[in-house]
Every structure is written in structure tokens, then in C-alpha cells.
Length: 200
Image (cartoon, rainbow, N blue to C red):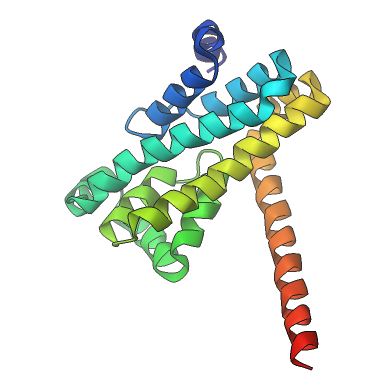
């Protein structure tokens, strides 16, 4: 993986945000490059700290485009592909989660690094009839949080965060998710309390 990222670095450096958009789109479609976008967005931000938000935006946008390819494939007849490509028990587990949580299942899995079964969820979103607008919004939220936090940390902490994320990618993804869940819960509680005060 390190050699592959090292090979990609001069290409991404040459094309900047456009290169990161293309890489993310390819990664989220049928050609997987696990964690390549994460490593490169951090590396690019260290090189050009003032562009951190731009890199996060372009990588997120590319993820949406690539994810829509898988989603459309599922929407146009991906049920048979699912049964051939993945074990039935894995599909059943993912389907149960997706049926219960809908778009939020996409948001959560989009925030997590491999081995989270991201593309299975994308296929099921298409098979299950999740609307394209809601689906795209789910990917924007999940990937936007993931890449935005990575880019911001790289801007603030530089190479220290690059090594931390590289060595602990799975743990980093879970911490990002936990932080977002805590923030979401606090916002929900605050809104509920504000609503009760106004009602009183």
C-alpha cells in the first residue's frame, strides 16, 4: 500500500484537487484503493495547509460520484450481483442494518475505513430503493466528516497526525464516528430541551 501511495503522490501533486477527485471517484466505484484517499488528503494538506478545506471538498465530491456508480448498478439490477459476489450471511446482516437505519447506515459506514463493507451498503441502497438525493446526501455527510476531520487535523498537527492515522486507521475511524455520535446526541438533547422550554 505504501508503494502504491508513493506512486500516486506525484500524480495527485500535479493535478491537485482534481486528481484527488478522480482518485476518490475510482476508489468508491469498482476499483478499490483502501485508505489511499485518506493518506493522500493528509499528505497534500501538509504540503499546502491553506487548501485543506478544498482538498476535503474535492475528495468528498469524488466519493459521491464513485458511490453513485455502485448505487446505480444496484438500482438497475444488483440483487443477482450481490448474491454472487458476497456470502449470503454477510448480505443478510448488512440488509438488516440497512432496513432498520436507512440513510444513517450509509452515513456511518461512509465514515469508517476498511474493512467496513461500504460497497455492499451502496449496492443495497440502490436495491432497496433509497432515493438518489437522500443517498448522495448520506455520502456527503459521512465522507465529508471523515475527510474534513482528517484534513483539518493535518493542517493543525502536520506530520504527527499523518503517522498517527497511518498506523491506526481503523481506530481513527471509530474515534471519528464516536465523536460525531456524541456531538449528534448532545445536539438532539439540547433541541429536545429547547422545545420543552418553548412549549412551557
